[in-house]
Amino acid sequence: MLSTAAYASSTAGDPETDPNQPKLANLTAFSVTMRSSVVFCLAVSFAMFGFGLSIQCYSCPDGSSNSCAAKLECNEGQDSCLKLTSGENTYTSCMRYADCDFMTLAIRYSLADFEFNCCQSKLCNGKEKSGFQKFKDFFG
Image (cartoon, rainbow, N blue to C red):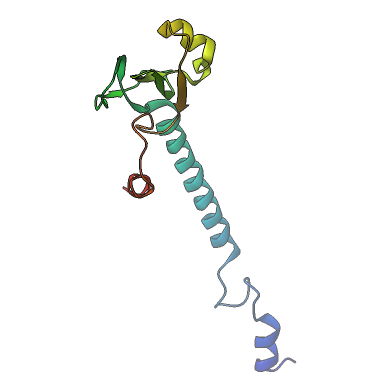
């Protein structure tokens, strides 16, 4: 016959017999709940960022020699901001990232000599920001 100490040591750590160990059924339910929570959070994130929210860009479609502060919520399908500079004029607007190439922009703006940049974050087509301003924008 096993002594109490021997029985306790032989069952220690066994979730079926040790009252101090969580039951396997409880762990399984917890795992399912956690997986469900993760899947739900991913689905909500995908819905918000994939379908519902659009990018915001500065918009000066007619060109400006001054800095432009007009902000525009881009339409569906416009997934990037454009900043195009030709001489003293700077054009900013929303556009599809797939259309961000020299030939498409040359035709759209009827220009032969220009520099451009397309970016895909909020208000990224404004004037160049300092390192501190970028840090501040990133952290709110």
